[in-house]
Length: 221
Image 1 (tube, helix red, strand yellow):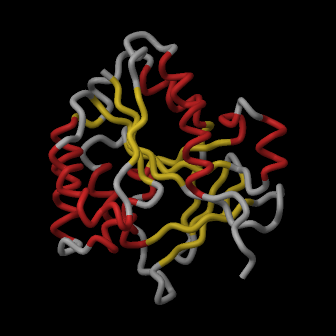
Image 2: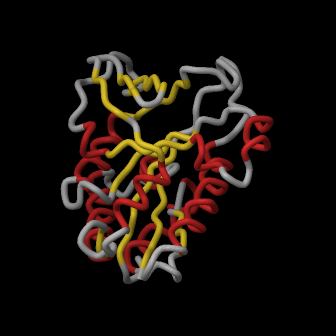
């Protein structure tokens, strides 16, 4: 298997930087900030602290996915959705359908990132988790589904689901245009979801870290 060249964390940090710039320019959102989640080894001692200290305000929840390295800079781009992680995200999305999104940045080489920086949102797309709904059981032991992304269409295998992607900047502007309070997650809801994840994963720090991998929120207010 070919090694991933541009990591999920690299994409998350850089795309979130551009997203924050856009969000902070919108009315009432000038003090927005990005919140990364505790992961892997950090989760061993940090998940209880995280649950207790989710910031007040409202949250736009983002599940970042890194594209596979092939084809380089070419269409379609391929991503992977984990079945168990999706189940957790879908439960959260049912509380506020507009507030929880997969993020698919269409960059799998640093060359392509440099060409468009600092406007990485130009080739970054959102897919609302609520629109995906419940997925059929994965056909493999890893519990993973392949996502074929060729905007505006996206296909999710194995039980084929076809949906429409939206540019990230357009989604953010639509959600926040009339004020974020009604559309986004309040901190009690996010905290309750994290606690539910903690219980469902039986307090296993490795499993919790895997479910929170690539997950972050933008806190507004």
